[in-house]
Image 1 (tube, helix red, strand yellow):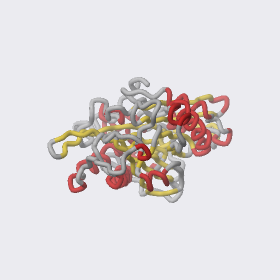
Image 2 (cartoon, helix red, strand yellow; image 1 turned 90 degrees about the horizontal axis):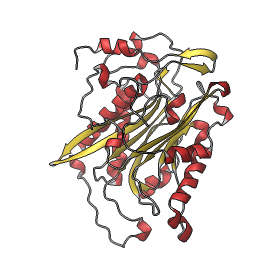
Image 3 (tube, rainbow, N blue to C red; image 1 turned 180 degrees about the vertical axis):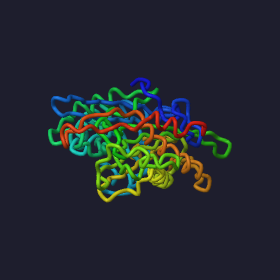
Image 4 (cartoon, rainbow, N blue to C red; image 1 turned 135 degrees about the vertical axis):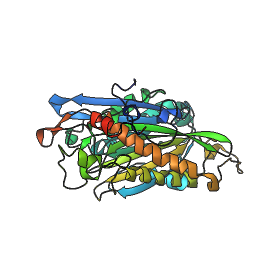
Length: 360
């Protein structure tokens, strides 16, 4: 990963609320790493990939990551969510790819977990249940060619690192469309003060949703101001949101936090279309402990009082809103494969700069 070559939304003068972390990225949450495998070959009509988020750099023995999930609209997939709903945690990475790549990425993530947590799988009754999510990239990628392979998932996980997160056409976001502009991977973060302590919240989105005429950025009807190239008559996409925080939250609080991703998505104008898979996961890096089967009968945990949690809810909504815009402003015009030859435009960043001039 490297610094983004194009200006991000704040660099254009867009006055997003809230105070971001130093990178304004999910990797502002200590220990969180992001990796990509980006697959592009115009001759093969290939524009796709895999994104991997590692909650912490554990090895040998997996450590549970407390989590919660939420669904705004269910026309999509995120594996492992039934166990998260019941147990309140997962182990291993979170991966995002295209709709037809779910199986290959699940296979690759499982292989990586077996190798990475070798002691757990070789000497104990270890099992892998990776979290793998998807959005549809069949307009910019020959999705039926099944370009994504298990080794691509392994590469994305192995490439995961901290620091700046490349946005736009990276990893699973490579073939994605947002509000009929080039979309893809976006990220943002917020500092949150609660009860005298400071916490960090970061988000990563795979933005592949929305109709042009719906798009609003910080209240401005940007989609109506930039109508050129709109082509959809209905919502055809999806969005995956990963929320990370170092605040010590219960499984219930994390489920509620995941729901707030929908608030951030809605700020951009979408109501969540019937054909859209809008699926969210929130996890906490705090309160690290052994797996439940290796823990004593009585557990002592530190959890944030739900009566104090509202600043985190606001931070999640703000960061998701900004991450979606970051995904779009990183975009470049690309050729479609359906219909072949047409060009999908990128959002006009200079027009955005002009629209928001003097508002920062």
